[in-house]
Image: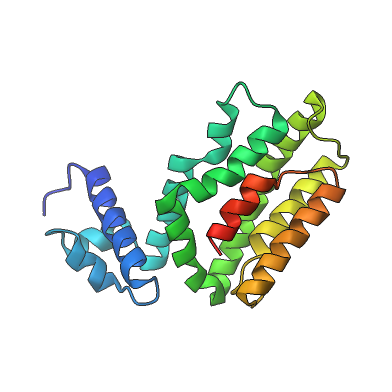
Length: 207
């Protein structure tokens, strides 16, 4: 059997097909056979040569989407912004990137999986230092008046990426909104006024 001369193209076709199906059907309803059927002539063997399961595909998609739309990298490129403004940029970008936002919503179906929760914890441990770097920048330029930047970054990730997830903490639409306002109150009191009027409006539109 001849070797695939273009493995990157094959992987991309698998990821494109999987993303389309995850968004249309949902993660749980999508099977490996569905992905293979959507791959445009690629075989079952081609799929399993690159991925052992749809869970591995999902992991690869998460990684790819984050690096493609990495808001922290984009924020650092905004030379005219101070540290606080860069943090706001990061948060607002998550609402602006429709495909990434839709995929994030689709991933909520995986929250009951212990393996996925473990991955979520690991990924959020990686996020905290990125937030910490921007918080420290804000402290240095005077736009943020807060201490314990490492702890503050970890708390912010905990509040926004765990406490506010309805599949982990079930909540009504009204409770979701109340929780968002409480996060604002907490971060304001800790010297991190990152949730402003524009962010409130964006959140209201998406709840």
